[in-house]
Length: 426
Image 1 (cartoon, rainbow, N blue to C red):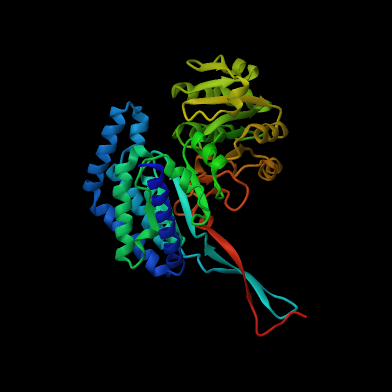
Image 2: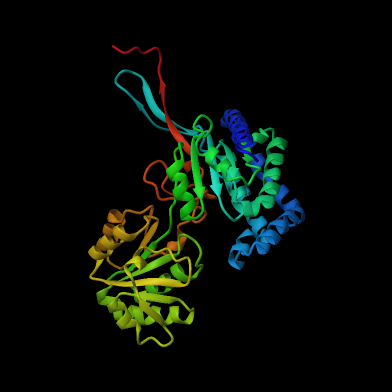
């Protein structure tokens, strides 16, 4: 597809999305809920056809030499499709927040002033790999009364087309515009360049993928970006703490799944509990094949753990997102040094303290500058579903508008409304 055709295509998608967004903004809760339930039904009915389209992507991925873990991310299993269907139903069952009024106050002039929650309008989403993101983004867009333009990875084009076709069918059958959810039909990279520079049609861009993709979009976009760069998450083991609980949580935070952005990548340990804690967590990590990259003090304490793979940490390790069975380990004096280290090296995603000291916990919550801050819980909980949002479109490490898991509320805005009875300003 040449540049002129790509420009024409993206302008058409933008115009259609803008027109659809006006219809979605006035759609009632029952209509949107009906569309989501219809989509869930279609997903369950179409498992075999969806898997047939998915097989084309899997075959192409293997032929191009994509690694097996990456191929696995592309796979639409019956379980993955069922999870998508359940996500649609959960969103349908949640209260509709569009049109909600808050903070209404009577002013001395006689007017009443408050805020109303409204859809953002049109969002563009650019993502890689997992085709189930197509359903997550589409369902959240429907629930929040927005229109969206989706640009999935070229490696999942057949799966994404099949899923988007079901979304459009569910919209039409529910009396909503099919153009409320549009998939960019081309794998041409120029389409991304156009999508992120169309402020006349697109209100916000949400990239979801590797750091390179997100940095490129943040650099080149002419539309506001809700971004999540990476997940260098920390678990700090405080003095005092419940050592048995700390071992359990630090184990889960690192090893429950290595690839998500909310897995702990760096373990900070207060010197007062380091010998006891590291001997226990070291044995757990050794048994699971986790490599530990330690500061000199941590290396010395871990050296005696049978089977432990311990290497010296470099400066780069404190900033690294491994997404692998690797963890950096640093001994710190206490909560002051832990907070300072996290605020310097963290990606401001999710950080946790494991402690029995209430004052330390409160300081950590207030002073750690991250989107999610936790006390005595695994960083793996940083997730829209686990937070009761129904689903998420990503996790924002930005500081304005949306921060942390971005669910329905993150895809809305507030406008001021004023109610009067003929008041005029003196």
